[in-house]
Length: 120
Image 1 (tube, rainbow, N blue to C red):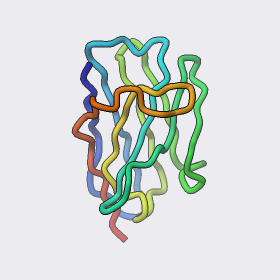
Image 2: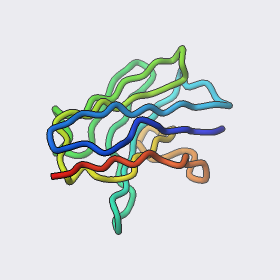
Image 3: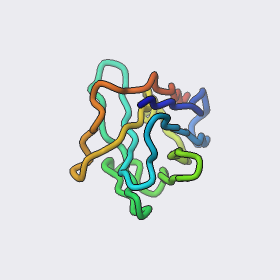
Image 4: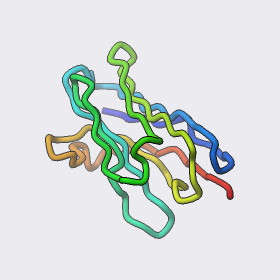
């Protein structure tokens, strides 16, 4: 199984980005997947998840109402639409398959991540 994240970049405060995570080697159709982020010097933190029915959860209060997770099973891809970005959103963003408790299932199979940098 391979996970490939993309879509990051450098934006100004208030800007938007749409991240993508494409899985290969495993169909995502019935799986829960999610996004994590890791800021410099900090631990990786769970951000959002989406189950096979499209039900989403957001772990960080500060992203609620600004970030939207979605999925396209036909493309084996999940997305994270990020609006009204803030400097504190600066991090490397990763995706993974999740268990029912939103813990990463493939702990040894993280992608390279995609860097999001928000300038003030």
